[in-house]
Length: 219
Image (cartoon, helix red, strand yellow):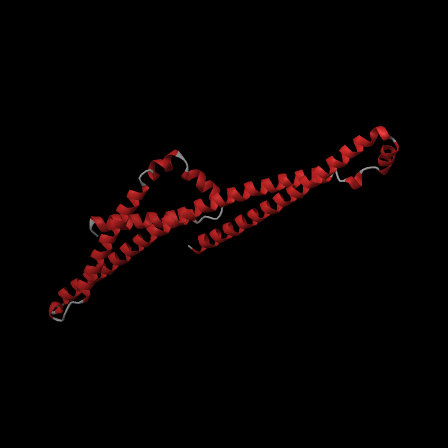
């Protein structure tokens, strides 16, 4: 095996190992996102686009060369196979061309798979972070709503209202209290609407995360 095909085969093995590691179920997308944001990863991502395109160009050239060799040795005529030695040599070269074709094809394909997996893991990590933030906001809004609902006028002692109505000096205080209760009720309604909005955002985030997870598993 020549140098370029040995290098390509080694690269193919590395791609297989990388795909297997990226598909490990016990490593969460959040951990992968942390690794992608590390200094070591950023050193490569600075020129990742150029590296990716250059490797695609090299792999495509080798893939086209393997197709050329495959067609060359597959179209040998009877004249080229006149002796047993020539026939065995032709079959050996045909086998090598087929081997190089599969190596180049799988290496090119897995290179796209690795890039796709990295993008999906990053997207999953972002969706999980957004979902967690939305859930915390919803829980905070719910606690705020419960605190506002604690000021429901139904929970006010009726004896206090009777004393307030009998006492003219406390009538102003009663009106202020009623106005405050109405204010709390309006705030409670608004908080409830905000909570519903946050719940919708959270559900949408969960659905998007499930879709990305399904695509990640299919890939």
